[in-house]
Image 1: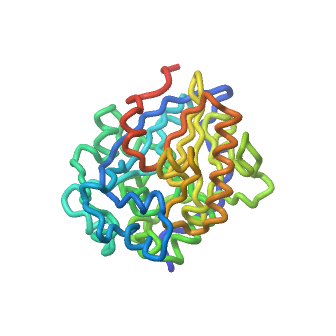
Image 2 (image 1 turned 90 degrees about the horizontal axis):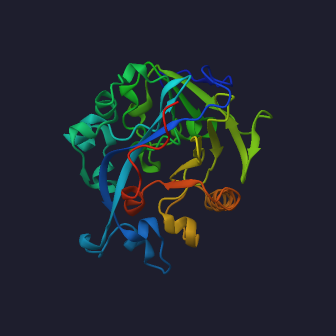
Image 3 (image 1 turned 30 degrees about the horizontal axis):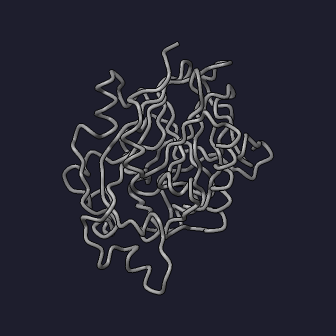
Length: 304
């Protein structure tokens, strides 16, 4: 699948690193939707797929889930995003941006115009053009929806994720027009000798060379999924994204219904659990857990 983008290998460290730097983290809610519980926590049985797609499950029993992004304030780099959340147009007509299949995969989408990341940044005095780096955990449409809002940024994506997104289509969660722009895409190859282990994770990259923002390879949900570890002044935060939809996935090792690769998903889950064991004070944020989302603070980390 040809794209307007011509991605290049990431040359690390990216500019702006500052020795010993810590960051501030702002969780950003860009919208909500609902889904059948068995989609997030799969059930057994011959007809389990029906419950995973909500067949025969009253909507009052479906789970409300957040669609999230994160603003990272780095003292040397400036504003960084982790994922982009929903595009502003989703507040008006979801199918226009999220694709034809979204009417089946994204149920009861709720988004207000001021929930778009670009609008939330402006409320904080940050223009979208000021965002220097966007780290994409993966390119599924609820995470990559608003890429077009940040044309001045460098987008960091794993190489296997880019390969999957540009060879697969909507049935696999990718909407080409969301990322089909001539932007600055930089690919991380976790098979490269430059990748190193970090805590419980077998492969990681220190993006700015100062330990403040690390990508860790957590494939399985998608072929190139990665999570992000950021260093606050007093603790670490793991933005796990869809490597764990819910806290129950982490606590009970209860897998979701659909994964690109179940073996890799299980391996990534083991690594997250090992990270938690080695870093018990870390905050671990799952990708689509409404209860966990409601417990988050508006901002983490003090200004330097």
